[in-house]
Length: 235
Image (cartoon, rainbow, N blue to C red; front, side):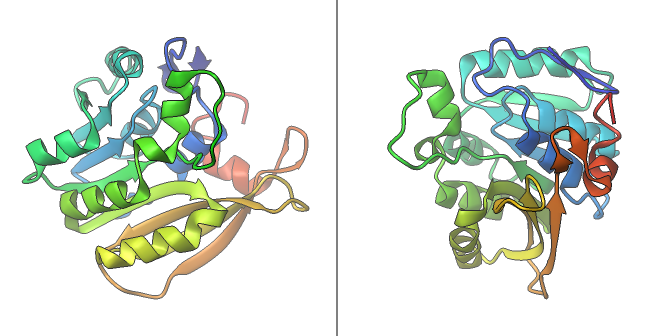
C-alpha cells in the first residue's frame, strides 16, 4: 500500500502502481473554476480522483476504470477514504460511458492515459493494457472530453513530451485549446520527459512553464516540494 497524508492507496491488484505521473497530475490539474463535478478517465488505483477530492469541494467526483481488478481496488480505496460519499467509480470502457452519460457535464476532466505506442510487451497483459495507447487512443480520449466537458470546464492530462504537439493538434480539431502547459524534467540536466497540459474551450495565449523534480537522487526541488507537499508524507 501507499500512504499519503490524508488517504491510503491499496494497490496490490492494480497493474499500474502509484507513480510520479499520477501524483503530478493530481497535484497540478487546475481547479480554479471551482468545480461542482470532476471525472477521472482511467482511474487505476483511484489516486488522481482522491487527490482531486482533497483539493476541491466538488460534490460529484466520478471515475471510469475498465480493468476488473483495478476497478474493484479503486472502489475500495474510495470507500476507505473520508470522501467516500463524493466518489463513485464506473466499471466501463470510455465509449460505453460516453454513450450512457453524454448528457452529463463535468467541470474538470483529468486523465493519465496509457502511452506506450511502441511495439513493446512486458509480458504482463494487464500492465500492458494499462500502459498502451491502443487501449485508449488520444483521439478517443479527447473526443470524450469534448463531449463531456462543461462550457467553462478544464481538461487536464499528463503525456510524454514527444506527444505534446500531436495531442494539441488533435485537441484543436475538437475545439479544445491549451491554457497551461508545464514541461517536466527529472533533473536540471536531463531532457524534458512529460507534459502536463490543461485545455479549455476558450482560445487564449498558452501559459508555459517548466518543473524540475530533483537536483540529485531524493533531493527534491522547492517547486516539486511545494506542488506535492500536501500529499506525500515525507515532504
